[in-house]
Image 1: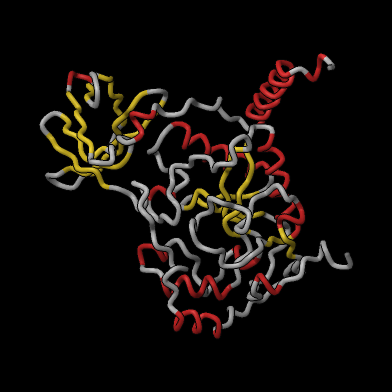
Image 2: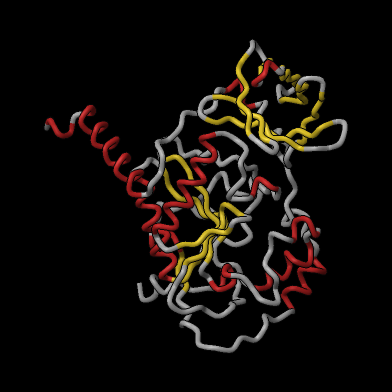
Amino acid sequence: MSFYNTPAVLLAFSALTASTCLASLNLPPKPAPCPGHWLGLVGKYKAAKDGRSLLVLEAEGSLHLRDSRSRKMDGAGGDSFCLAGGIPAVFWRDSLGYGAGVRIGSEEYQRSFYPGERGEQTVTVWRQRNDSLWALARAASPPLEKGRFAKPDLVDIRSIDPGIRTPLTNPEGAAQGEPPVYRKAWLQRPAARALARAHRRLKSLGYGLAVNDAYRPWYITKYLKLSLPPEQGKYVADPGKGSHHNRGTAADVTLFELATGRQADMGYGPSELSERASSNYPGGTSLQRWHRLLLKSVMAAEGFRGLSKEWWHFRHIGPRPYRLMNAAPDELVDTNKQGQ
């Protein structure tokens, strides 16, 4: 066996490649996972007296409290901690082991759980589809647009790079336990190629890209706006203007670990729409925040622009826009496979 193929040399070469890639992206080293006994305490808490919120987060190997400022908590044994000035912070847990509340000095805070944070199933709009609203959306037409547009050239993402996970091949997608709304993920060719480059760049760091949504016909944007309650509807584009999904230039993506096949911990639950969706959400753990930064940095390096209110959403920046499209994804024909 060649010296250059020995496990030690391959491991050293892999580490050097990863270090070089991180440096090129101006990223810090990957942090260690949060200690398991702290994970149940990380989250949002509200003051019993007046409803003020604070976050308990992990940073640089310590737990911190964050409200108007960030304060480190030093361990004092078990679920007891101590803040600067000797102020005690004592947690208590629920029957599942999650932090249910914390007493800081003489003030008590109750846990405010995010949807699905304790592992409970969340119901998506697809499982409770309103057929009358669906029919209304299917009968509607996108707004007319004026101007010069690039000629559409949608391709199946996996025909560009089969290593990228899409709704059919992503076992841990955003809509767990339910079939995909459509069977293939499509993007305009320049965006699909850029996504493949991002996937290849991530592979040197031990990660891959999983796509939860890409081209989305206009009628689905219309349906989502009609059916979602206002607090969730703010995450959907105005159908009167359409979205970059409708043009085939945007993708909703996350990371998965090549070694295990599992999705990377991004600090966000499936089907959740909450403040944790923000790309600048300050809570969670160091590793969760690093994963989000890694995804954002790699996508930006390949010509994608993120959306501050949704860490998973990226649109490809091209020289000319594409028109809003309304064709059902399963009716499209991949130009890569024509004539084969």
